[in-house]
Image (cartoon, rainbow, N blue to C red; front, side, top):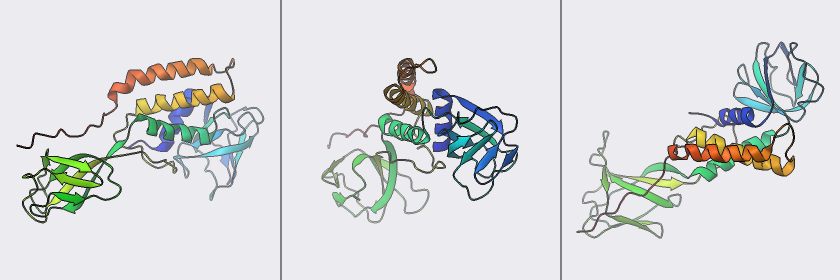
Length: 260
């Protein structure tokens, strides 16, 4: 699955100036690329992404740069010669990139989780649910006690006050069978760049929603410039998000059937 790092890197390419290259030298606090002529401190406070090597899939904040060298806070080991990298300028800082992806995740939609912590009790209609199950979408009952479980869906239940309530006459009639709950969960912040984007998130919708967040930040903090017209970028992002919106999975509760 795509990671937070990949989402941030794609976002960087959309909203700022990115230079790519290959390290000709490195230390725990520097990456050198003798082929470049960057300009002193042009990338200061920018974001340096490691595309391969020891630190593949991570990024650091650039504390200063010369024409050929980026400096950053100390890493555990030296950057290897041959490491490919990409560097984003300072306009949209690393913390804003990360926040944009997380805000986009929250904006898009909750996601689905499954749990099989409950087991059937013959003819029991009411089951207390774990506290983390708040928005119940689907209830399935196993027909076997070992794999393959052969789940079938129940359409005669309600969710109320933290309880699963089967309609009279529709409670499971056997003991000891797994109840599989599908429920809706809000996205929590991704912090480690290696963390996966949840499987049900459409990456195009995520990307353009994050671009829109960055464009609003840029318009508020930097204002429109010859370099980037953030107002236009926000309009583009909004239109592109809308065009991809239909690809995003919509989460719905299973229908309830009449109890007769």
